[in-house]
Every structure is written in C-alpha cells, then in structure tokens.
Length: 447
Ligand SMILES: *[C@@H]1O[C@H](CO)[C@@H](O)[C@H](O)[C@H]1NC(C)=O
Ligand SMILES: *[C@@H]1O[C@H](CO)[C@@H](O)[C@H](O)[C@H]1NC(C)=O
Ligand SMILES: *[C@@H]1O[C@H](CO)[C@@H](O)[C@H](O)[C@H]1NC(C)=O
Ligand SMILES: *[C@@H]1O[C@H](CO)[C@@H](O)[C@H](O)[C@H]1NC(C)=O
Ligand SMILES: *[C@@H]1O[C@H](CO)[C@@H](O)[C@H](O)[C@H]1NC(C)=O
Image: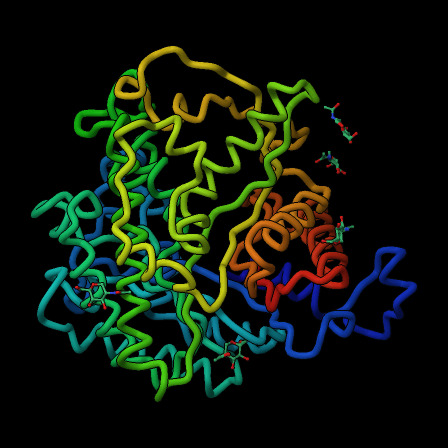
C-alpha cells in the first residue's frame, strides 16, 4: 500500500501550473483532466486484509489455492493472504496516507466469506462492522468508496458443496450475497462493481489452472490438473458469471437504486491485442482473440449474445441464453470497469481437432506472444491503452468507463528506485488524456 501510494503521490502531488502546451510536451497535471474526473487507487480483499481466520471469516478458494501452491508449508506468509497488508487492522493508517496522497476515491473488494461465512444464510456482524468502519473512515476523509463485490475469493464451502461457479446455484447465492452488501452498505457506497475480471477467472481458474480454484485438464492446463475439464468448464463458468452479474444488477435496480442513487457495473481484464505480423492470418487472429478474450463477455452485456466467431468455433460447448436472459443482460451496466496493463501480440495458430477436443485457446486458434523488453512483460508506452479506449468507444457505444487497475510490478528491493514505474504510469496517464480529449467517456483512473 505504502509503495503504491508513493507512486500516486509522485504523479498527483506535483500538480503545479502545467499548461496545455506542457501537457503536449509531456508534463501533465490533474487540472488537465475534466472536472469531476476521479483519481484513486485500489486493492482487493485477499491481498489487503489479512486476518484470514479472525472474527468468523472462513477460508475462500484463494486461501486454499495459495496454501496448496505457493511454497506450501514453508511458514512464509508473504506467499499467501494470511497476513497480507494487514489492512483489517491498519486501515486507519492507510486512509491517512490516502488522504495525504490526494486520492479522490479508493477501490476495494468485499470478502464474501468474511460477511457470510457459510456462503449463504447467516450474516457475520463482525465482518459487516469491519466494512462499516472502513467505509465511514473513508467518507470522513472525503474519499469515495468504490466497491467490488466479488474478486476471486469464493467461500471454499460453496466450492466444496457444488463446485462454485460451475453450478447455476451460484447465481442465487451470489445475488443473495450482493443483496446483503447493498442493504448494509448501499446507503454510503454508490459505485458498485459486481465481478472483477470474470474473463481472467475463467481462463486462469478453469483452463490453465493457474489461479483459484485451480481446475484444468491435460494437455491444456499448466497446473496440476487433478480436477477439472479445460474443454468445457471455462464456458460454463463464463455463462454463470454473466447470469449472476445480471441477476444482481436486476435486484439492485428493483430494490435499491431508486433510493440509494448508486451506479453499478462489471469489470473486465483487457489487453490491447495486436497482430504479431501484418499477414492476413495474424490480423484475423488478432480480431478473433479480441472476440474471445473480451467480446465473450462484452457482447452479451451490450448486445445480448456471444460473438459470432465464438459460436462458430466452440460448437455445442457454448451455453445459450434464453431470450429473457439476453434481455436482462443488455444494458445491465451503468459503467464498465477495465483493468489494463499491457499490449499482447498474437499469431494465427490453426487447430484441426474437433471442438469437443479443444480448449479455449485452441478454439481461439491464436497464440499469445509477449514481446516486451522489460522484465515484467509490460509495455511502457501508453498507446495500447489509447487503442483499447478507442475500441470500446467504437464497438460498444462509448460507455462510461472507469480504469480500475493499471500499474507496473517491480521487485521489492528496487522500490525506492522506481523510475520505470513512474515512466509507465506517466505514459499511461498521458495516453488517457489524449483519449479523453478525443471523446472517450472515461470517468476515472485507479492505480
Ligand atoms: C461514484 O463515484 C464518483 C467518483 O468517486 C462520485 O463522484 C460519485 O458521487 C459516486 N456515485 C455516483 C452515483 O456517481
Ligand atoms: C503493421 O501495419 C501498421 C500500420 O501500417 C504498422 O503501424 C505496424 O508497425 C505494422 N506491424 C508490423 C508488425 O509490421
Ligand atoms: C425473466 O424471467 C424472470 C423469472 O421468470 C423474471 O423475474 C424476469 O422479470 C424476466 N426478465 C425479463 C427481462 O423478462
Ligand atoms: C524498454 O525499456 C526501456 C528502459 O526501461 C524503456 O524506456 C522503454 O520504454 C521500454 N520499451 C518498451 C516497449 O516497453
Ligand atoms: C479519435 O476518434 C476518432 C473517432 O472515433 C478515431 O477515428 C480516431 O482514430 C481517434 N484518434 C486517436 C488519436 O485516437
């Protein structure tokens, strides 16, 4: 947290009197952005809170995954969320730092197993109390809470009971959990995001098996693949995520929005996808990859159905929406949250196997190539963000957007020599400003 805040402070603190011409030559400040544009920073419950077994919280699939995979049994808590940033105990100190930094807003997620330890049913008053304290402390410091309802940490008990997101039962349970969040916090929280990066959840958690709950099957998965089915499960989980989102939004609109006056959206992980060469095949592969990585979710949300190329390539594996479900999906968002980090080059990669023997990557028939010069694999130049915002403007009717994540990972030991990170963030803010001046409806930026 400290580290992150220091960077944001560097960016925002030096506001001073930057003119428009200075902006063009590279120096920009907060004043160059439209009135009301929001600058914030964000964390997720599992990386931030710690206190994993305190005050009634039960394990989530993240606890299980981190304990099983990251140096299990080493006794080193830096590889799991048992202590994390210890935000459960230190949020007041952090909010002071946020205030000093000049943040307008703070994005955090709520831990489902902290407020509903059995996944459904009884609400844990201690968990609710923590979030009430956090929200009130933020508001006392003039910082707007932006809340993500689900960020990977499904209660393990629901994973054990019915395989979590694989079962349509999740739709009702997620909606009931969201109902508790709206009821308890919605008088003060007016920016809600239902799901964080469902498009990353499906591929990491159910195809590659590299994120919780770590399901996959060989030869596709890169995890241990003791459970799972990379051919079918990603599509089932994606479908349930979309239906759970639209169900929670529909509840919010019916029961809360008129009196709480909040906004609700969903979050996607979006890379700028470019063809590795300008061959016709690679250009087509880049279009296909865009449809598979983000159109998979954005097309149902804006147009009520999956992209045509996905339906063609996946055959009967891709679940279908009823007319009623499509209608509920369309415009189930007041804004789109995006997490943008880098440019991804793709090459054509044709597959002959029938669709019931292919996983998501093979259905997509494109191969990702990371071609950056940095150790992180992230591109310093910011034009990728600009192109993503242009794509969203042209393909999805220029929706209101919050950039909910952007940043540049660095090793802990070089934290006080973070030139490349400052350069990365400056570059991206400059590109963002260019996009806004060219009509992008982006309303805020969270480091
Ligand atoms: C949403 O967030 C913005 C920025 O933090 C804030 O100004 C606004 O009041 C919040 N709520 C709504 C309904 O816009
Ligand atoms: C492909 O063409 C575009 C537009 O002419 C150009 O900017 C880009 O550098 C080319 N890409 C490659 C890999 O040659
Ligand atoms: C879809 O069906 C459900 C349950 O039958 C109903 O509550 C809902 O209003 C319907 N939605 C639309 C958009 O027709
Ligand atoms: C490559 O690294 C240098 C030094 O860190 C940086 O200035 C440059 O922007 C990087 N290029 C890309 C494409 O990331
Ligand atoms: C500005 O927006 C127009 C219309 O969407 C688009 O054609 C153009 O490429 C954009 N320019 C930049 C620099 O993004």
